[in-house]
Figure 1 (cartoon, rainbow, N blue to C red):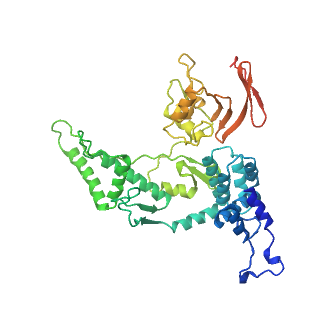
Figure 2 (figure 1 turned 30 degrees about the vertical axis):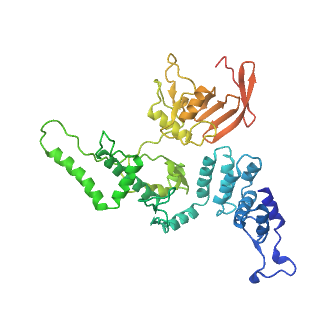
Figure 3 (figure 1 turned 120 degrees about the vertical axis):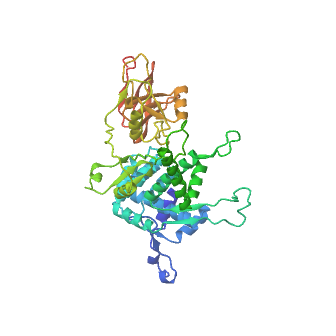
Length: 452
């Protein structure tokens, strides 16, 4: 990348200013701006020779030059982090590309935010960049949403000749369908398919001896989607279930109860929306984070909830804690921790915080200890693998605050995991083992383990 930037610098003189330059209208060379607002121009033919030297396609070189110039001239803080090897090249390039449509003034918001988070995992860093790109130009993003609405559609994927019998990729009796619809409609379609798949699975005839009729979840969803292709058949199936229930409810009971065909109720979806109070009240334009859907404009959140029965629950104040006297972390505690951490708390992990994570006690639970040992003040969500590694491979972990965890690996590497990502800390060893840490801002913390 540094070579590419240097090559651009060496070819930054306007070719049209040279003696006997061929005018542009006759095919002559000119300066072109491949980066965003504020980046210098480069002689357009310079990319051809450099591509040959790099054994690369001209378009790939032009794209690399655009990203490199954007980083140096528009994202200086991220560029410095890149030169310091604090962020991977592909991540920095992706952020440069994502933010190219922003003005030089607007992109400063992205630069500051991502530089503060360069120690986070690539996925988290890109998610932050994405939200800040939207926040920096809300009106521009609204226009993009409007343009995207005109590019919706449903396409049947046509098979290539030979695709029916190909031994590796062939599909003799299956066809792919690509659907591009607004987010709210996509979420609604997914919920409908899920509900119908539940009803099909609950009323399927299964042979216990042969296992005939047993299908995977994906197979039931595919069958539900296929049924929706014939809306009259789907309506008749659901109506038959309702009719069976109604007839049984009206009939007099005669003998033992008979299991009824099942029509499942609509799934109860829980949507956690994170946003600033001024954005919520409409005082300033901004971005909300809605569950796993990523950053959304507030009008997109409203569209997501349209035509649905909504139960508004109280705001969860993550500045407070909740504890219990039992060993198991209750759902309320798990929810608070997961909302606070967003990801599992093993250093540098990109695993999102879900209900499938284990909830470990950083300070071991003592059956004979005081009450209130279990709570979000003592809760570390981990995947089963990292939980086992922490338990059996001599890792040390302490929860220092809400969402803040100090880790020491078996070989003495120190990491401080926070909701903003991990930080490296220097572990100080003494005669009794670990006696303190030095944090990135050079604050030395001494811990008296005897007193602790």
